[in-house]
Image (tube, rainbow, N blue to C red):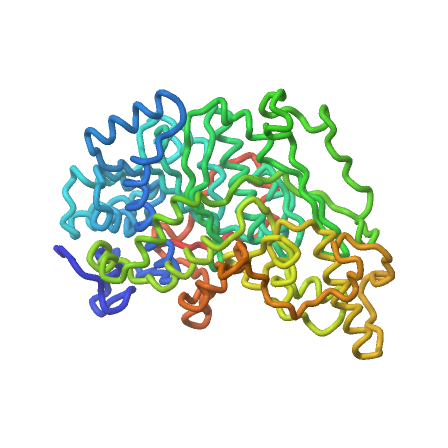
Length: 548
């Protein structure tokens, strides 16, 4: 048996054939080649940190309503720890780490459909000296288990091969009010627009091919979760949504709130995307309540109260428009939760003592810093290289473009997956007019007119930019300052943190990505859940396994 109290020199398969990660050690199955994917260390490290933070954070953030407040007060009195269900555990490595590294964990059920995997889980729990009162091995169909255990768990972790969509209904039935869903999807080819039909029947929306595809993938996942929750009069609060390497991981709080369900349509939008240029527009399905329309009920349809009519062609290039979505356009993250996680990852001595099993601190802290710098309330983004491919001029330095937006009074940031992203509250017209101004200035400076990708792109006489002589806008002007304080902007914060924290790290080794499961490993081939679309799925891409 192994009662491990410190992480190994390196995560992965050790000389004795056992797998070490964090404070866990799992045994190989006799006669099978050991399978281990070190790419997922970051996934599990982030999850361990998220569960530790959530356990204390939920005490200060009660679900809405009298029942939610009463539940939180009861938790404060009893200090009862988290109950966790891992639906598809494979070797049980993740749950072993939860049992040993989550400070106030009451009980974790470690489940797998495969009998050999379930037996291996039992052996691994025993090998790691985890008592049955803390961790319990389970051999069952996770969907049936969750459907038959109503409101049983504080945390449900779904990390399947491919899409998590078949498991969402069961998870939303089994998670408690105010509980946490941790959901991973690895079918990025589907979520990024390569298989429209599959994307729609899995997630209830479609994804046009675009440079913001990774953010849209997260929003399609959240749309699927929020729609399934709404059918149970439950609402979701995304705490942290991450696009990492080849997969997507979201941490979502589930609350019992019919009132918040009424706002679901306002947090859901259809998407228009031009096939020729970067232009896109989101159209919410309903009008959210505000001071201007306080007499409207939540969820009032836009069309009944002066909703805008979508254009027939692209307003920039007159190109053909395609429709995507519907997708979630509410927040991707909860600021207070991200700040709590960031605080835990900032203090070097504190994190070493409190979280001895977490080894990917540099990447965890960098990504959380990048997330904290994201501009909230501005779904999707443009990219500088996409805009410059239209003008066909020398690239505008990214910081000059962002500083110009800030000086015009707008906010701007990156996306945590894309450092070249321009996520801003400026309209699409402003973005394209800035690109046009840059192109015209370089045409005049060189004396040779560029040939834009879009015919007539430089011929526009008017502009949405406030400067009367907008063609002469100064891209070299530094960010304006008010006294000694830098003008408030997400990009200003981004530059401050970038000096101290690397946020966009390169892959640590070549061929960094999913690996195929070893032959004979019981989790190597996922037993497909019958969805009624088996014939359609024959033409969809083979899901690449990303087992523990």
